[in-house]
Image 1 (cartoon, helix red, strand yellow):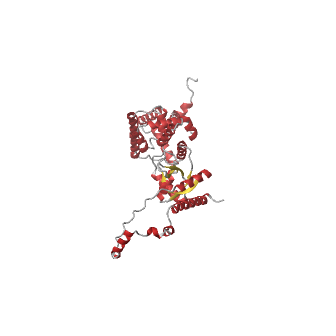
Image 2: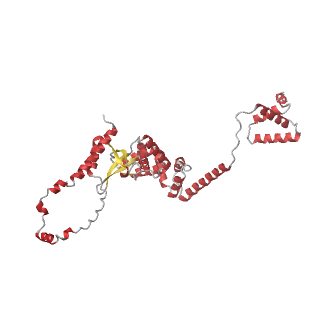
Image 3: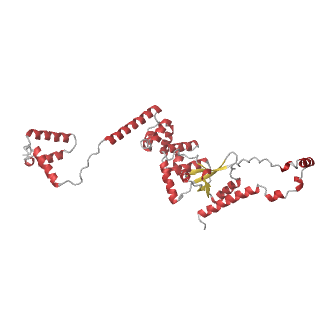
Length: 371
């Protein structure tokens, strides 16, 4: 059984040969022009006399003919469209190599593309080739001319243009309605992490086509309430949408859905004030983080000798060996730190037992209440 790539090549050869046959049959051959009767070319009597009078002048060089204008690129022949339609009706789809410049990319829910991601995709396509074919559909215009419209794989076609590819292998599918085309595009973009505002526009477009939130949710595979929240984001003012697209890390999908779940979106002035406050706070935190010195990390292991020396120094301080006033101030500081919550009271009791002379014996002595 022939592979899919070989079948695509054969189909393309048939398309090209069919188009060539149509052009050749519509153009008269040289033999047919030479076989015309000579009587039709014979000049009339007045024309013959004029020819005799100008016989001597005929030897003079004739002026150069004006250059013919370059032929305009004609539309693809209708036979190609008919052949493609016949293959689609017979097989349910067809795989063809289509010129990249002839593919229209204007029907997509995604408004912007990340150039860095496109470069990564182009490098992958140059190294590994085209793994998944884009999906096209055939559409006829007002003048009867047909065109290829991309419904899935816009990023792959843009990456192919970056690589300078002339043609790209695509799957051409039939769509029963505009609604089916839209759902196909939504499902394709969901796999490619579409921006939430673009997705909200797609859900709203499906709603305008007569689809309810329940029907959209069943086709896409999400909760009906989620569809309603996304459609509510369509009412966001263009100025606020521009901020969302400029700062996607701050105004992400989670923030937008939480905003939509509260009900109708705030008016432009209120929402813009909230977003500007978030931007200012985010910038201030970023500036403070950049200017703050990085704390020194403690070593993973502590030297035993240093630990003994530090404990001896603390024992001399808290026991009053360095003076009663200094010891009293030190204990007041430690007690305030414990009250403030920097360490637990159990740690304070442990310090008393280990650092104060006689504290351990006093803790073991029975109290008068117990006796």
